[in-house]
Length: 151
Image (tube, rainbow, N blue to C red; front, side, top):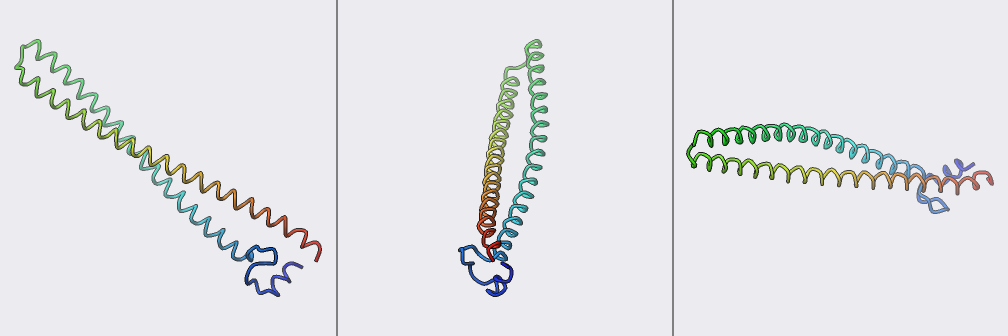
Protein backbone atom coordinates (compact mmCIF):
# COMPACT_ATOMS: atom_id res chain seq x y z
CA UNK A 1 0.00 0.00 0.00
CA UNK A 2 2.87 2.38 0.79
CA UNK A 3 4.23 1.89 -2.71
CA UNK A 4 1.00 3.17 -4.23
CA UNK A 5 1.12 6.26 -2.01
CA UNK A 6 4.68 6.94 -3.17
CA UNK A 7 3.65 6.50 -6.79
CA UNK A 8 0.76 8.94 -6.34
CA UNK A 9 3.23 11.47 -4.97
CA UNK A 10 5.65 10.79 -7.87
CA UNK A 11 8.40 10.38 -5.25
CA UNK A 12 8.94 14.17 -5.06
CA UNK A 13 9.61 16.07 -1.84
CA UNK A 14 9.65 14.78 1.68
CA UNK A 15 7.13 12.24 2.87
CA UNK A 16 4.46 13.27 5.39
CA UNK A 17 6.66 12.04 8.26
CA UNK A 18 9.43 14.41 7.10
CA UNK A 19 11.78 11.76 5.68
CA UNK A 20 13.17 12.20 2.18
CA UNK A 21 11.94 9.89 -0.57
CA UNK A 22 13.75 6.57 -0.46
CA UNK A 23 15.39 7.20 -3.84
CA UNK A 24 17.19 10.28 -2.51
CA UNK A 25 18.20 8.48 0.66
CA UNK A 26 19.47 5.52 -1.35
CA UNK A 27 21.45 7.85 -3.60
CA UNK A 28 22.99 9.64 -0.60
CA UNK A 29 23.80 6.30 0.98
CA UNK A 30 25.40 5.08 -2.26
CA UNK A 31 27.46 8.30 -2.53
CA UNK A 32 28.57 7.95 1.10
CA UNK A 33 29.55 4.32 0.45
CA UNK A 34 31.58 5.32 -2.61
CA UNK A 35 33.38 8.02 -0.63
CA UNK A 36 34.12 5.59 2.17
CA UNK A 37 35.44 3.04 -0.33
CA UNK A 38 37.72 5.70 -1.88
CA UNK A 39 38.95 6.73 1.57
CA UNK A 40 39.66 3.08 2.43
CA UNK A 41 41.67 2.66 -0.79
CA UNK A 42 43.69 5.76 0.04
CA UNK A 43 44.30 4.46 3.53
CA UNK A 44 45.50 1.10 2.20
CA UNK A 45 47.87 2.89 -0.18
CA UNK A 46 49.18 5.08 2.65
CA UNK A 47 49.66 1.99 4.83
CA UNK A 48 51.67 0.29 2.07
CA UNK A 49 53.84 3.39 1.73
CA UNK A 50 54.33 3.42 5.50
CA UNK A 51 55.47 -0.22 5.48
CA UNK A 52 57.95 0.49 2.66
CA UNK A 53 59.28 3.55 4.50
CA UNK A 54 59.67 1.47 7.66
CA UNK A 55 61.63 -1.15 5.72
CA UNK A 56 63.91 1.53 4.24
CA UNK A 57 64.45 3.00 7.68
CA UNK A 58 65.35 -0.39 9.11
CA UNK A 59 67.92 -0.93 6.35
CA UNK A 60 69.31 2.57 6.94
CA UNK A 61 69.52 1.98 10.68
CA UNK A 62 71.42 -1.26 10.07
CA UNK A 63 73.87 0.52 7.75
CA UNK A 64 74.26 3.31 10.30
CA UNK A 65 74.99 0.79 13.03
CA UNK A 66 77.59 -0.89 10.81
CA UNK A 67 79.21 2.47 10.00
CA UNK A 68 79.36 3.36 13.70
CA UNK A 69 80.95 0.02 14.49
CA UNK A 70 83.55 0.53 11.76
CA UNK A 71 84.28 4.02 13.18
CA UNK A 72 84.81 2.55 16.64
CA UNK A 73 87.13 -0.10 15.23
CA UNK A 74 89.09 2.49 13.25
CA UNK A 75 89.34 4.73 16.31
CA UNK A 76 90.64 1.86 18.40
CA UNK A 77 93.15 0.94 15.72
CA UNK A 78 94.21 4.57 15.31
CA UNK A 79 94.81 4.89 19.04
CA UNK A 80 96.92 1.74 18.97
CA UNK A 81 98.92 3.05 16.04
CA UNK A 82 99.12 6.58 17.42
CA UNK A 83 97.35 8.02 14.37
CA UNK A 84 97.04 11.70 13.86
CA UNK A 85 94.45 13.51 16.02
CA UNK A 86 93.16 15.31 12.94
CA UNK A 87 91.91 12.07 11.41
CA UNK A 88 90.05 11.19 14.59
CA UNK A 89 88.52 14.66 14.67
CA UNK A 90 87.38 14.31 11.04
CA UNK A 91 85.83 10.92 11.80
CA UNK A 92 84.06 12.46 14.77
CA UNK A 93 82.61 15.18 12.54
CA UNK A 94 81.42 12.53 10.09
CA UNK A 95 79.82 10.65 12.97
CA UNK A 96 78.07 13.86 14.04
CA UNK A 97 76.73 14.35 10.51
CA UNK A 98 75.46 10.77 10.43
CA UNK A 99 73.77 11.32 13.79
CA UNK A 100 72.09 14.47 12.43
CA UNK A 101 70.87 12.52 9.40
CA UNK A 102 69.50 9.82 11.70
CA UNK A 103 67.73 12.50 13.72
CA UNK A 104 66.15 13.93 10.57
CA UNK A 105 65.02 10.42 9.58
CA UNK A 106 63.48 9.98 13.03
CA UNK A 107 61.61 13.25 12.61
CA UNK A 108 60.23 12.07 9.27
CA UNK A 109 59.13 8.81 10.87
CA UNK A 110 57.39 10.77 13.62
CA UNK A 111 55.56 12.82 10.98
CA UNK A 112 54.49 9.66 9.14
CA UNK A 113 53.27 8.10 12.38
CA UNK A 114 51.25 11.23 13.15
CA UNK A 115 49.70 11.10 9.67
CA UNK A 116 48.83 7.44 10.21
CA UNK A 117 47.08 8.28 13.48
CA UNK A 118 45.14 11.07 11.77
CA UNK A 119 44.02 8.64 9.04
CA UNK A 120 42.89 6.17 11.72
CA UNK A 121 40.92 8.93 13.46
CA UNK A 122 39.24 9.86 10.17
CA UNK A 123 38.37 6.24 9.49
CA UNK A 124 36.85 5.86 12.94
CA UNK A 125 34.75 8.97 12.34
CA UNK A 126 33.57 7.58 8.98
CA UNK A 127 32.66 4.26 10.60
CA UNK A 128 30.74 6.04 13.35
CA UNK A 129 28.87 8.10 10.73
CA UNK A 130 28.01 4.88 8.90
CA UNK A 131 26.67 3.38 12.13
CA UNK A 132 24.69 6.55 12.83
CA UNK A 133 23.20 6.41 9.31
CA UNK A 134 22.26 2.77 9.78
CA UNK A 135 20.58 3.50 13.11
CA UNK A 136 18.69 6.46 11.61
CA UNK A 137 17.56 4.28 8.68
CA UNK A 138 16.41 1.56 11.07
CA UNK A 139 14.47 4.13 13.09
CA UNK A 140 12.85 5.45 9.91
CA UNK A 141 11.95 1.92 8.88
CA UNK A 142 10.37 1.27 12.28
CA UNK A 143 8.33 4.48 12.04
CA UNK A 144 7.09 3.46 8.58
CA UNK A 145 6.12 -0.05 9.60
CA UNK A 146 2.93 0.90 11.50
CA UNK A 147 1.77 3.06 8.58
CA UNK A 148 2.31 0.10 6.21
CA UNK A 149 0.01 -2.18 8.21
CA UNK A 150 -2.69 0.48 8.74
CA UNK A 151 -3.17 1.08 4.95
